[in-house]
Length: 360
Image 1: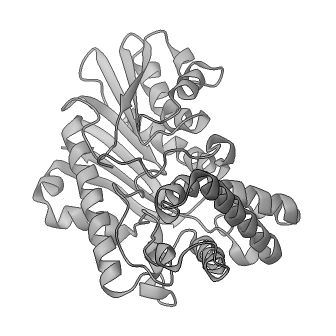
Image 2 (image 1 turned 135 degrees about the vertical axis):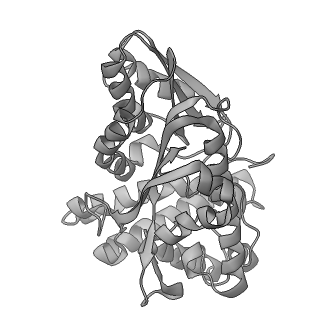
């Protein structure tokens, strides 16, 4: 975001509440290894980039299969792993994990972790330098907070009319920018895998699309609306708030290649699909369904980890610091109570969008 805090800045204990993300990354580990195995080293240095790395063990899991591929095949080459994220990322924890017992740095003394500080909507590496790129659970975030009146919802999938078209245009511009930058950074025959939350066609849903987390975001809106009715959040604040995300369908993901000839000519699309997550696709907390308190508490922690900073910056931006803390706690306590009462009614479903590209 230009001159603004990122939508993911200030996440509360993200690593401790990101088990679903970990499962998604683990489910793609073999795919990342197979992708990396196809890339032949073109120089004495090998460069791997993870776009929107975040922090902790998940960031290491994202790239470790690619690092292992290159260390096995090219033990005498230097390998640089570029972790791309905002300045506010917890870099110390990230590099501790990289060097830790389960990290990739122990695979070879020739591995060097590198921080590439900044948005992945800007250049993150030198031109034609990256052999393998990955991005897990990050590319659905938009480059800036949308300024859209979104009465009746707080997320993209239930928007209607001009508001939906406007947000989709923003999402498509961001996705096209992301792809164009990666095309510039990848070297010839380099490969990129993007895996994130997706959506599938469904005529029974608003706008004919069924998106990951649909019940969750509707529950969040119900809680926020109740707080408006109780005089805790202003009606205009909720009306003008939308989460800065867009979960793409396969068709959404492929649109830029149809209108941008540089992308169409520069990339070979090796894979493009939206499929159910391999673990608990119908409810990411299904393993806790018989323990209502733990189910609700885990669900609350998961949602708070990726929404709190956005609520601070946008939904509650006019509040004092003390009032913001009080309102956030009230929101998440109410959300937890709603989840515990409804249990499976608010199941977080996951479809994963996976795109694998090769630069020609």
